[in-house]
Length: 593
Ligand code: ADP
Image (cartoon, rainbow, N blue to C red; front, side):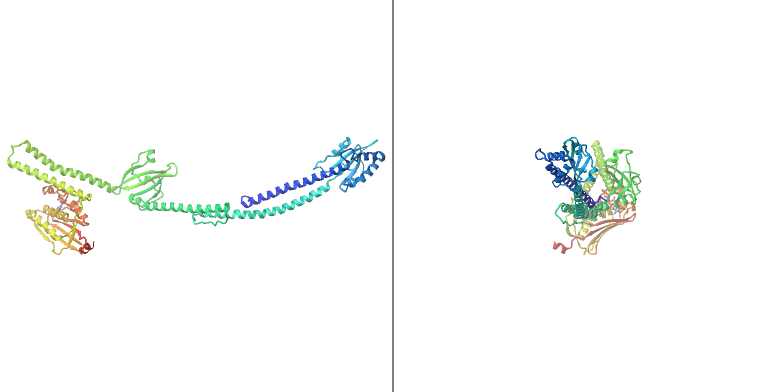
């Protein structure tokens, strides 16, 4: 109940009022008591005197000596007004032993108490001391009446003081009541001005805690509470900005996480799966479940046994899933003994591995292809050297012929490799020109005619005059057609038929076809024919002077022209190679450029 600010304020103000009133009341009543006491003794002292001359004592002693107690009574009754004798204050005549003899109030006098002042007077001294808290205030003076000793005793029962004190107490109590009432009202007012803004700020803070950052409190004063409200509004604004930035970053990260091609999975320290992105599901072939564990997902991962340091640092390993090679990188995050765990990044390295393999195979092929003619050249040269002048001239000529043809083969391989390398690195810039395709194809056919006729083939050219012009590198495209035509010549037994044709397709592209009725290619070899150094019949290819690079070069050049090359073949029946090329810019479009 007293925890609310309002109740605390009420309590403080009530305590304040009560304590002030208690202090005021005490001082007031004490002041009244002291005033009356001082007044009493001043009055008595004024009558009985402090010095011999002003004292009334000699007069009293004289009266006592003459008329005894009656004489004293006469003097005292004459002095009564001066001594302030009334209902509360009386004078008495006591014997020297302190017994009541006569007085202004006989019934009261019979019950007189023997106070310290009476005792002092009995001992012959003046008794003029009373405490402010005593029940009465009194004064006793010894009177020598010759043969009889008397004591004049004046006593005030303080009733007047009590009445006055009571009245004062009543006033103080009334004032306190009013004060308390005012305190309660004031505390209401105070608590309203202090607690209402605080309550509003509390509500605002609760609303922010629930995520409502658009909270703005009205600033109604310039005091400390006004400053607090302003600071609160500033804080809410800052918080909104910060939360917005954090949210933005989180959104960016989650989009990245969702759409990245690499798989990412997070595990807690006990190995339970916390998160994983769709790429992980695809790469590992699992569905997200909270019960999945690291060990279940990566059972085949090669982990160092019981090696604590392994989970504290990065670690990369490889696994194979569904025929794909996956590189798994494990990285710890957070504190491994508490809130933290391990993040696994799954990267598909299948293509990379294939490329590596292809590169290794290529280097091995190049070495092999060059070593064969080199070995031949060396052995023939050595034989010639060892038997200079001993061999018949015909044999020598034959040997030198072999050396010559092997050198030519090497030169062809090196030239083809160079061409491929230039195509690979984009260093072979195409010299694009507009030329008549029909002319180009006929030229190539003419150049190949003799070679074809040498093998007893019939070379048929079917290129209509109305073929459109083509935009391309004429020299490179000629090389493509030569490579394909010479393959048709090489791989067709003598007396075969070869057909070179070209057609326009829907005014945008052109198709060039080379058909033969040669040896054909087994179906399983067809997909690999465009690979470098891939040959179906190595011996036949070498014999015919092939390098195994002709189709690879043709494919690269066609692709650089944004075209497509395909090969269809039936083993033992023949082969058809088809090249589709875009015509390139129309003459109109070109002019506009
Ligand atoms: P090569 O220099 O050996 O001819 P290519 O790259 O030009 O190399 O051809 C690759 C392989 O494809 C050849 O070795 C051959 O086995 C096969 N080939 C190409 N064209 C034909 C064809 N028209 N008929 C039969 N086989 C062919």
